[in-house]
Image 1 (tube, rainbow, N blue to C red):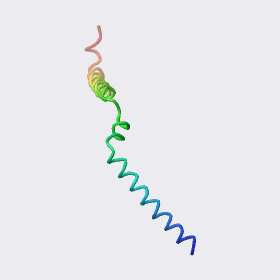
Image 2: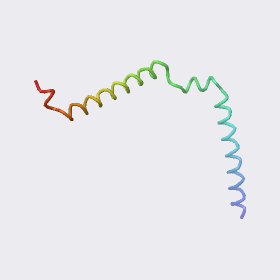
Image 3: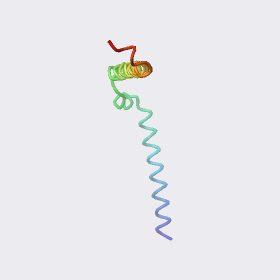
Length: 71
């Protein structure tokens, strides 16, 4: 029985500490800035995603009518 009580007490304290830590991390704008990626990387990802979408569309067209693209 004492181990069960100890387990629940430790678990309760652990949950409380974790909640406080998360709250402090989310309140800190500096931490958010450190953990977020640079703007240039975001733009580059968006550009590459757009290129992939265009290439997939082109691939669909080529598969649909492959003889049209033969020279």
